Length: 538
Image (cartoon, rainbow, N blue to C red; front, side, top):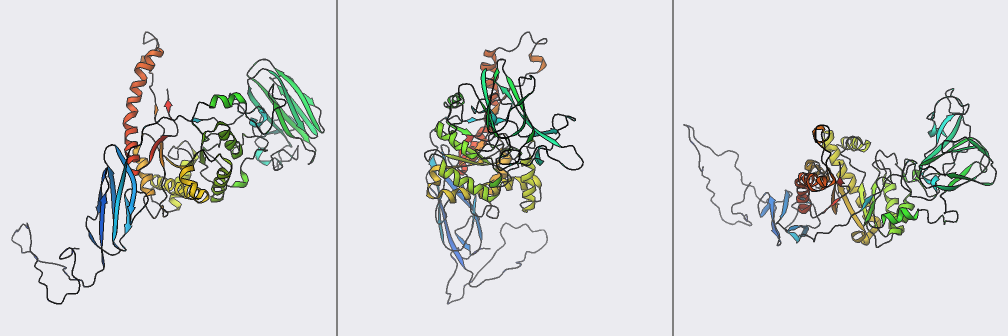
């Protein structure tokens, strides 16, 4: 399609002669002919003026200035060295590069660029999961990391865990309300038990509990003791050899409200500690050098089953080691205590209401001077995690692609944008200052980044055109030692100096091209490049 001249004709009153010639044709005994030529009267067209500000260039497809109405145009911006894309201005605003739009009027569009921001290094920390076997000391009340309830046959037969924990009748905080209980299917009645491993501070502990029933306790693999019950009880026990452990069995419990409940295991020296300040001070102190905390493991993000707000862990839940992760109240409290930014990972199956309530809670409870990094799940490209299969299933169900891998990457872009939009709605005008929308990707595979980017840039997948502020990678570096590098084949093991001066620089050099490739994408999109994880991986 073309116009003669390029501006077209309007309101002709006299005939116009149009001559068309074959140009650079090759004749082989055949004649040329003009096929399917027509003059169309009254076609609506618009003018398109696309330009670039200083620091880059811009192209459009098709490359024309007069374009028929309803045509789809794609424009791409390319920053010069030392610059990054800063968004579109004029008759098109926001980000997305390339960006497609429909010609519905005359348009003047400018691609803007900005100098790359100064390099800065702020190191955060991925803190480990709250589990009974963690060597960390997150809480001075050890029962906050007790293992979720296990079951065993109340007659003593069978093994350590009979697997009926999901059937235990419990109250709103998770304390058993009926023990023993009948699991059905002809199975024996069940007792309920839990344990805490890695008790690492020697001294005298205080076990505090409430309610009536039959309660047995064991520590450091000693003899089981039957403890008195009724009202509020205290039992002191000493740990001399560390790491120690303690075990609890509820053989029977009174009906509510007198059921066994509110177990606490108080670390030596914290008998008078304020429950409103639940963290062990040494745990807090050792986190102070960092600039932020990523709560991926605290939220038990990998393989999460958390779908709704009503299922989340609460501060008064019987343990914080539930599969649904640590309560948001403690996440906000720890970040506020440290005055460090909070990086949260939204569970992959969480519904919109969970996302919205999370946004509202963090908006209202996290110190407003702190930033909130918002990421969808964790490593949704990594096949060892259930969320990778989930995003592929969802992408296929949403008809994002017929290829499961591609559909999954598109869905990550789609769901991420939906989550960011909900957060932006709840944070309102404070969103630009308080939120960092994070798109994570596979550090070593740029193709994953490009697929997620393609999903975000597709209006059919991301109709609200919500884009991230940062691209996050995990540029681990490592060096593998083979049998040839160690005795008896090698004369000696590598020294620390050899590892630091030779092996590590070589490993970092091997990763550098991957980081540079991801940085180029981030610059083209106008995003920061950050790390969700990283470091040595020997």
